[in-house]
Length: 240
Image (cartoon, rainbow, N blue to C red; front, side):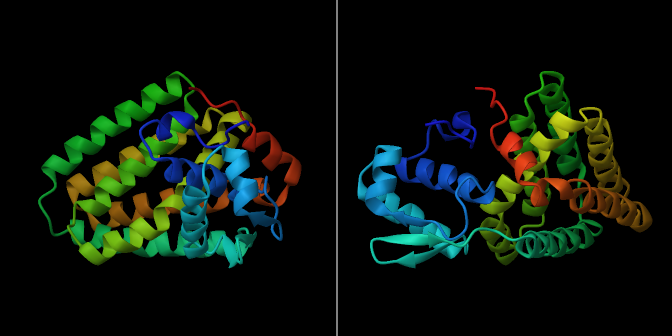
């Protein structure tokens, strides 16, 4: 079975976590269509696991509104363009709140940590490891969110992260396939975010914020409306 979620990220994860990560990616990338009936026995055979990790995976995906529980299985709900927009709306709210808090905080250590991450992101792109770049991108923003030490904001982020991660991986693969030079702009936006945090200039923060989220929400629309493009992106060779 070809894996669409990066295997290297799952090496130390449990069977249940491996199943849910791969199945989530298959649903979000529409390899498994909305309306598909998933049975525990079918999935157990596909992933070569017992029914227990399959049952746990379906429970997690039901909480994410990607499947609807049925007796001994589930029906795929999938993810709509509206759902994707709403996910980015929540992300925008979380990070906007976080940036406002950072304007009043001491951020020297955070800035240094973020600069190191950007260098790692540059290396990932140098070697065309777009999935690693995606994980670093998520880690970059998560590090910023964690820095304000707000328990309930982290709860929101934790609920959002698994689906958002798949969206970002697919989006970044699409960019690598269609316009590799676009990563220069993405990296610049991240450097602008770090500079804004460091200088604590409200206008610079607003500029960095607007550029980053404008890009995220408006650069990959074709991916979500064209089945042929999604198929190619889904099957993009994952570097192990």
